[in-house]
Amino acid sequence: MREPTIYERRERLSEMTDGLELEHAYGATIERIKAQDVGKSRLGVAALMWVRHAERPLRADELCHALAIKLGCKDLNADNAPSISTLVGCCQGLITVDEETSTVRLIHPTVKGYLSTRSDIFSKPHATMAEICLTYLNSEQVKAILADPSAIIHDKPFLEYCSVYWGIHAKREHSDHVRSLALELLQEYDGHISGKSLLKQVKYLDRRGCAGNSCNDIESDIDFPFSGLDCASFLGIVDLVDTLKQMNCCRGRGSLVSTSLAWAARNGHEEVVQNLVWNNFSSINHHHRDYFGLTPLIYAIQCGLERMVETLLGYSSVDPNFPDDRGKTPLSYAAQDGLEGVVEMLLGRPEVNPDNEDPSGKTPLSFGAENGHVRVVEALLGRYVVNPDKPNLHGQTPLSYAASGGHEEVVKILLKRDGVNPDKPDNDGQTPLMRATLGGHEGVVKILLGREEVNPSRPDHNGQTPLMLATMLDFQEVITLLQSHGAETPAQPEA
Image 1 (cartoon, rainbow, N blue to C red):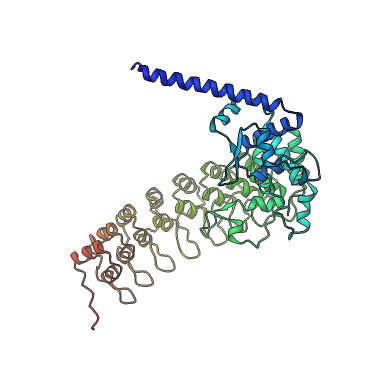
Image 2: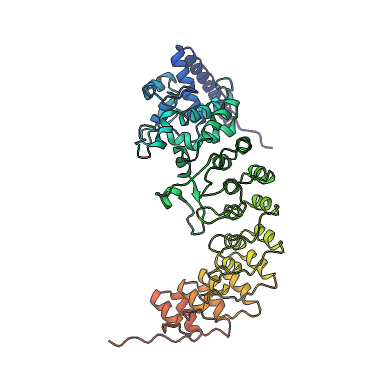
């Protein structure tokens, strides 16, 4: 092992010295904060706690309102909120306000590291922050928003943070007081403004391909019922789920968005799922479809949660074939997303039909081929009941889908199967070659032209040939390939 040079030793010594000096400086600053009068000391320590442990950077007005809350108080008084300049002063310069974002941050990343070593400065910070958030949400002013949906809430800047993050803080550090405040909120949660705020952050993965869209983005005028049990299941707080079940007070009118089981499944909270299913909770319907027509099993598949899928499939009450409200099965979802492990699990169930069609006639094989999932395609073709050339209602075959996507390996695999017609037209007369041409996929075009059954000049029902389309789209490589295989040059219109 090489000995460090004198310069490297000096650099390391300098870093150690700088670190010790910083630690000494931060320690001295903390002592100055504590030496202030009681009010300023309390504000300084509390502000540091929030800036250090918040789940996202807080805006200045959010931090000020957070420090105005008195634990357990039912009345919010914005007049108690300190100014941001007061907080900066109470923190003796350890925090600052970013001018571009108006968020509060520590003066330097090393402050965060130092605070992480000082467990004596903050006592159970996450439990304290959860208590403050829940106190805010249980206040009369926030509850009143429910009675008057048109109420202006811009004067409650801390509402969004409390609604979205109280559960995360509660999971990090639980306490009896947190539990009590949470139950107070969740018993009257259906319709509470905080539920709406939480749902706005949810990224739906629905059958319409709305990944990345929030509830608010998809249909902002929809009122989503969201019970306390739904919320606790969504957050994955088992203790609250169990207590709410025992209290039998959160069934209400049910959830049009999702059952509690679906929320737990889509967020990967396996222990909550087990709790709900093992106890045979009567309000849980394992096949309940949510607002988007999805089931807990389909949610788990769409979120790529293989262990959750395995857990759900372990219950006899979960039907692995139960489709969404448009007839798309769990196997088709798994094939579409290329989830090889889930596909194998589902294929291992005797009741699962690997060649099942959705209402459009599309099979799991077509879903897998369309997205180029080689191993999924191979797994499905390993089942003798799967028809490798089965068209949907529009006449599109797995090969057509693979050609459209330019998936060369899948095209090669399908062409090796008996019964696959490489020149089979769909209902519009478009062959796999034409589909590949439209996408400019010269690799697939070359593979298909290597088959003697493929007619390079075959027109569709509109009289357009592959070469005509390639010329119109100016795909020069495809044009060259087609012409080299005898495709005729399109006739030029007369002037």
